[in-house]
Amino acid sequence: MHVNMKDIATVIRREVIHMSHRARAPHLGSALSCVDILIALYCKVLRINSSTPQHPDRDRFILSKGHAASALYATLAHRGFFPVDLLKTYGQSGGCLPEHPSPNCVPGIEIGSGSLGHGLSVANGLSLAARMQHKAYRVFALLSDGECNEGSTWEGALFAAAQGLESLAVIIDYNKWQATGRSDKIMGLKPLAKKWEAFGWSVHEVNGHDPTEVADALRDVPDKTGRPVALVAHTVKGKGVSFMEDDNNWHYRVPNDEDLASAVAELVLR
Amino acid sequence: MTSLAAEDRRLALLTGDIGNRLFDSFQHNYPDRFVNCGVAEANMVGVAAGLALAGMKPVTYTIASFATTRCLEQIRVDLCYHRVPVVIVGVGAGLAYAANGGTHHACEDIALLKALPEMTVLCPGDPWEVRQLLQAAIAQDGPVYIRLGKKGERVIHDGRPHITIGKSLIIKSGRDVCLISTGNMLSLVLETASLLEDQDISTQVVSMPTVKPLDQEFLREAFSKFSMIVTIEEHSSKGGLGGSIAEWQSEHHVFTSQLVCIGTDDVFLHEGGGHDFARDFFGLTPLKMTKTIVSKVCLRKKKRVLELIE
Image (tube, rainbow over the protein chains, first blue to last red):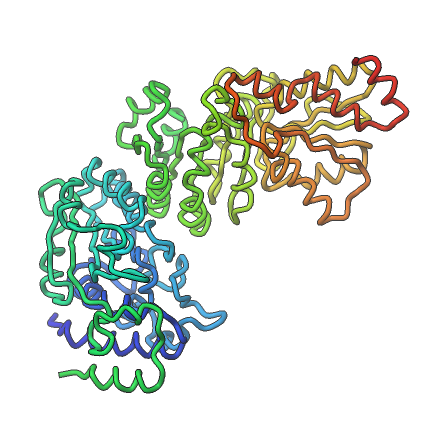
């Protein structure tokens, strides 16, 4: 099936901006940052079927950076996991789409997340279970660079390497920002790719806004090195909207009507 | 664990780099389902959650303080929020590892874990309770914390009764005072009861290995029968079994009996010394507990008894 991933990404970005505007919900920059990674996963990489979201042999996707939930919700809806209309209830009181996903809130959500540094360990467990149960499914976890501040992320990195969890891949949405500053300054993440390599992972660096490049790097997990895969995806926070790109104010800022109109005007299908 | 693993292919054992040789037979028989997760408790809990989400039944094992307080947020988010069937086994309840210093004492773990929604908290009092409750915990749907003493606790339940989660066991009957023990204090509580009996105070001894959910049926009956209920635990009575029963009393307006909570104080123990020293420091010896109880018993008997003990 031919899918134009760039067009889908544009649709998702529009959706995400509308969701943030409607719900007055923050973390827009973080959501826009990982849209292309999600598109690559959901269009080209993950072996999943939206009509059987609990299939025991499905690939698992873990959104460890739970604050990008809007991007995942929009992606899942557009891939048929639930009606697109439901996105209008994002962040609403009593609704099933909280600003950080709760466990099983909608089909396709594998774990509840929001507290950083949890996703990799849970992904480790899922991957270990596949080995114990002789299953061939793979596990993909999307982390933020800010999450690499958390000690538990590095506990998880050491563990996965020691266990040789080759069907596990981590994608780091490396947009060089965290909530209140440059991620390299706050916690000394550089050199990030070398750190993962030193921890025993099979590391690739890609342009995180080229879905084809992302998909090509992930499609063949496990990569026969016997090691888990870390994909350092270089990204731009707020990607897709000129006045949001690389402006960390959009970590918390919510678009007003004017911002919405300008943003949407930039996001047109070609 | 090894025999349970034979019956249930979903059972997996994760350790935090302790239990040298303890799991040799498990490892030998089920190498694929044994993982030493290293000194990385937060990751171990997350791994257990992932295993459980995929249909396994993991049991984690390490020292009680590290199994709980070290990785409390992982327990809250990965296990409780997801309501996954993971059994956390913490060894070294209360002051069992006293000699190792305050880092190894676990006198707050019950309080912290019982506050988490979906969590079941079990403190077995003898090896038979351990055996029965481990089986029951593995059969549960949600997360369970099992708080073990150390090795060598005396067997109390010679009759091998069937023990279920949420039910208490009467070990010895009495009329005046009811001692409710949870966890590794059980044999000392029995000694305390016989000292009280020596002073002509008829004492019932109950083992209450489940701190959450509380055995409300038993409590209703006990509070209608005894003039004094005493909780005894090797844990801070703030938030432990004592605190839990005080909360229950207040919630249900049950003030028919006097409640006395015996446990560790709201302080750290900084001195060196073994388990017996630490128990003595916190007044958790049969003689000191007897004095505490007697000092609160109704005045009529009190004067006479205190004279006898002195």
